Amino acid sequence: MSIWDSIILGVVQGFTEFLPVSSSGHLVVMEHFLGLKFQSLTFEVIVHFGTFLAVVIAFRKEIISLIIGFFRGLFSKNVISNIKLDSDFRVAVYIIIGTIPAVIVGLFLKDQILAIFHNLNLVGITLIITGVILFITRIIYIGNKRVSLLSSVIVGISQAFAVLPGISRSGVTISTGLFMGLSRTEAVKFSFLLSLPAILGANVLELMQVGNEESSIPFLFYLVGFVSAFISGFIAIKVLIKMVQTGRFSLFSIYCISLGILILIFL
Image 1 (cartoon, rainbow, N blue to C red):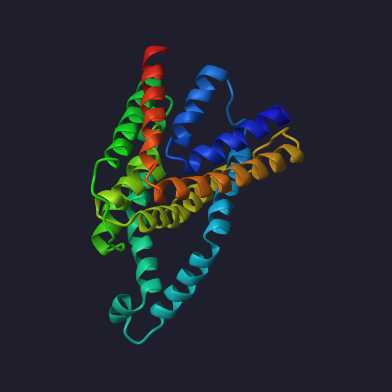
Image 2: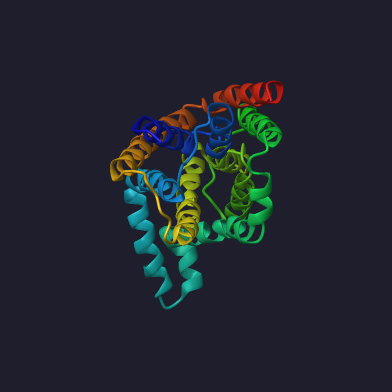
């Protein structure tokens, strides 16, 4: 593994983690066609923490408000009525609820998912599915609703499907939010906030597997991978927010469908 590999893997992970094109799908494609892959679980965890930090920095104000609101509501005299009255507490609860489907899938279907993870046929098909979902957002009516209990559950279920390589987490969660009548701003914000527990949880599980892993990768390579993932991830977040708000989100459908077809043709 070279320092250029560290940069490429970090940049690809950062951009594809948040742009609706599926990071897992791209990593499978890179490994198959370019022979480029994470050389150690430690390096993979560090790169993922780079993308996690990118979301934290990009949404730091909202995250602080949600944390304060959550504990304010949790220790209030009437928790139930506070869900209705305190918007920060309410959204924090919805994020927890929306995370449950992904947790269930991750814990109980992990082995089955790993068994099919490197199937290029699957990646090609799921990328096309992602592209079709993105394209549909172009022709639907865009509402102006705020996130609700029902929409948080449905968006959370859609996030659970993103464990499949080729299904974009940001793509399906933002699209599902729009299908549920959320405003563009609300859909993209809830998608990113919902990603935090998912990314952190996945990282913690991977970190538990690292154990005493021996690696010959220099510390500099870890640092470069982390920084590359953070910078590219932060840029990707800003780009995606802008594209969703200006109604150009569906343009990613062209890329996903085209890549999916190419994978199926050139297997």
